[in-house]
Structures are given as C-alpha cells and as structure tokens.
Length: 283
Image (cartoon, rainbow, N blue to C red; front, side, top):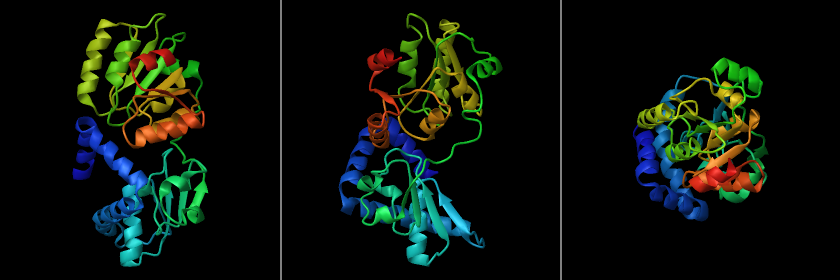
C-alpha cells in the first residue's frame, strides 16, 4: 500500500523525480543493478509468504516488482519453478529484466537494447500480452446503442487508466468547445476529484460530454469511440489496438509514459499530442 501511494503521489505532485529516476534507470547499468536488488529484496520476502505452501507449475508476472521478487526468490531461496514475465509496455526498462526469469515476453524486437541486462536476448520472446475478452468483439453501432451514445457523433474516449492520471481535465475542456462539435467520453477511474470537476463541466455542455468513474465496460466504450486518447502508457493502449481504434498519446506521463510513446510513434501505433493545442490538432 505504501509503494502504491508513493508512486501515485510522485506522479501527481513530484513528476520530475520520476523522470530523473527513469533517466538514471535507463542509462546506467550500475544504477539499474542497485534498483533491481533493492526492489527484489523488498518484495521478494513478501511474495515468499504468498507462495508458501503452494506448488505451481508456472508463475507469470505482469509487473516489474513481481518479476524482481521472483528473481530474488530464485537467487536467495533457490526457487526453481518456471517463471515468465509478460511486459505490457512499449518500453522495457531495466526493472522488467532479470537473470532469474526464464522467459521475457516483450512487444518489440529491440527491447534488449533497453533492458540493460547482458544475455537478455536468450530469454526474450516477441508477443503482445493478451487483453481481457470483449475488445474487438462489438461493432460501433451496437456499442453506441448499448451505452446510449449518439449514433452519428464523432466520439473521443479519454482515459487516464485506473488512477485517472494525466491531463484529462484540460484536454476535455478544450474538446467540448470544438467546432464542428465532438462528443467527449471521459473515464476518470478512481480519481474522484477529476470525476466531480468533469461532471460540473458536463452540466454546462449538454450533449458534448459524458463522464464515468471506474468502469467495467471499457470494451464497449472503446467499440463506441472514434478515437482513444490516453496518457501514453499501460494496458489501455493494448486494448485500443485490439478494438481496434486510433490512439492519441496525450501529455504522456513522465518516464515510462514518454518512453513508451516514443516507441509507439516510431512504429506508427499511435500519434503524440504533448499539449492541448496538439491534442486539438490531432482530433
């Protein structure tokens, strides 16, 4: 809980610290090794308690700290179960890569250059991680009928993930004023203050803005959308590409967000909008 809170606070209040850390992590093998060791020791002991008494045939990690913990367990506790990491990120920073992981599934062929781990190529496999069932399974008209959205509008789905991070509020405020009109659908996740502010905005722009908090209907929302706007990182991009819908990486989060956006743009999987004027231009 402390790690989760600290990360959220860092991104919202002190984003430059995350940028500095990510820069060091991505450039220095020594710093990367120290980070791997400290994270692995912290979470490895806790994961050991979870695995105690269980005898799995395979352990799959989808998060860097989980991979670090498994690596620590193999080195310090002799844990021998086959371990796999699925990297749902378009930039594989060094905290994703470990000698104690048997296979690393990554999404792009040059990931070994970013991992800063000698021999990473031996365990690297190419293959996008799966997303939840439902994405790409519904037509746009059907989704709009289910959600009660206008059938002919140009709909922009804006999301900052489960935490509602990024410049969603500023982006939505600009989009609801566009001519010709677009219909913005904002998913605020668990960011209650963002949701409250946008609901007030929706009241003043009837028919141009629909606001949600945390949702379980993302497959339908993406199917209904004309384009998906997100903060440039996370599983949301994978879901949008599976839908499939065009992706705009808007005001990417520092560190992994900007690094992932660079990789996506380079491979023509998304376009970037670093600020509100660029977002308006892209839409």
